[in-house]
Structures are given as C-alpha cells and as structure tokens.
Amino acid sequence: MRYMLMMNAPRGTGDFQAANWAPEDFKAHIAFMHRLNKELTDSGELLGAEGLASPGEAKLVRAPKNGGPPQTDGVFPESKEFLAGFWIVEVDRPERAYEIAAKVSTAPGPGGTPLIIPVEVRQVMRAPATDV
Image (cartoon, rainbow, N blue to C red):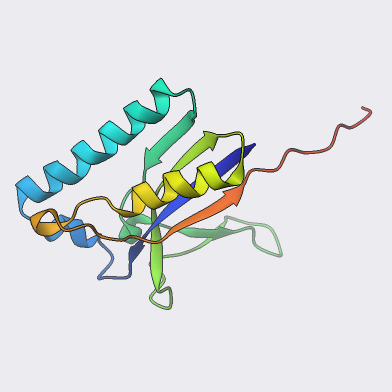
C-alpha cells in the first residue's frame, strides 16, 4: 500500500518559522530529515520525498471560465497551516505509515526540542484499469 505523508507547518507571515531559527537548529532539523530518508530508503519503503518552498511563494491556480490566462491567488491567510514537505512510502500495513508519520512529527526544532508537527497520512489510490 502506498501512502503520502504530508508534513504541515503552522501559519506564519508567508515564510516558514524555521527561517528564523539559529543556523545550528536548522542544520539539526535537516540532518534529522536526511537520516529519516536514508532509513526509509534502506528499508525499501521510500518512493519519494520533497521539501516545499515557503507558503509565500505558493499560488492557487484556476482556469478562467471564459478562457484567457489562468487566475492565481497568493498567500492564503485563512489557512491554519501549510504543507511544508511530503514523503510517499510503500508499506505493508497502514500502521507502518502511521509509525513513520509519528517519527516525522518528532523532527527537532529550536534547542533540539521535538516540534510535534502534524503529519497527514493519506493512502495513494490507483486508478481503475480502463479499456482504451
């Protein structure tokens, strides 16, 4: 079964709060992520993982009703949190995806204190076969 683990960051000013951390705290956070990715790669569970640019760079795009260029919106102040990064894992049971998400949640923040970041876990569905 494939799952997407989505790490959410709290709403801020359009930038991730980590941008204001001490360099050693940010370095420890990234080192944690690299170790986690290596562990998941070594176990054969990691299919992909990426960090995302800050929310201030995000755009919500819609096709216009009457043609023309796409319509875009900028930062979304009504959002409580923003997607900061994701992993796609392949595991044999949902509980393993939850275990990995819980580990992601403990990524270190300032002073090495675990952030307890919310991580949404969603199964990646496959499209049904079609007769084309």
